[in-house]
Image 1 (spheres, rainbow, N blue to C red):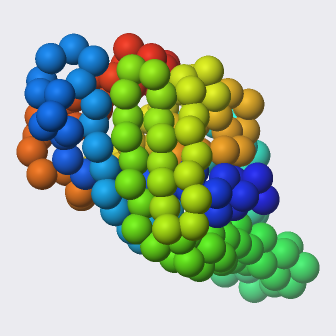
Image 2 (tube, one colour):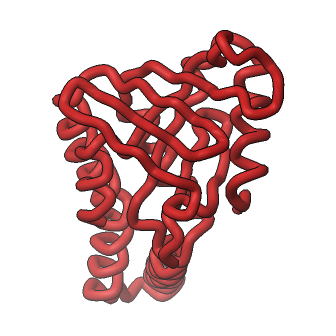
Length: 194
């Protein structure tokens, strides 16, 4: 997960804004973005990443197993009057850790991105270029071969099975529904939706 933080700190995490009107709506038109990343953007992107990659599967299994163990222990304790403390404590701690660790990561990533100030992104048929107050990064489509979309953000994912690097394009910056449509068209043409 530290690579995601590095990518985020290098300007690789972004948010969406408006269609570049200089190129109009014709094929090949770029979508330009200007934004600052919020904790909500990061949370939405992390949830989406965990939902569509192998990185999220073990976490879901652990939460389900720990939750099942917790419920079984409570039911047995209530029905028999005998409480087994170790499984009860263990399952509670595991569930708490699985829910709290991502929140700490989001705070940490947000602090790093907040130092970068405003991001400006250009999404074209050639790739994505992001510039911030502290530098720039250009990604071609081979480096971000897949994406997912939520109600809040577009999340561009690296090709590795855990999608360690990601780029966030929040929808709240879009000024017109056509902007989201054009961005989706570019992503569908150049990457695979997951």
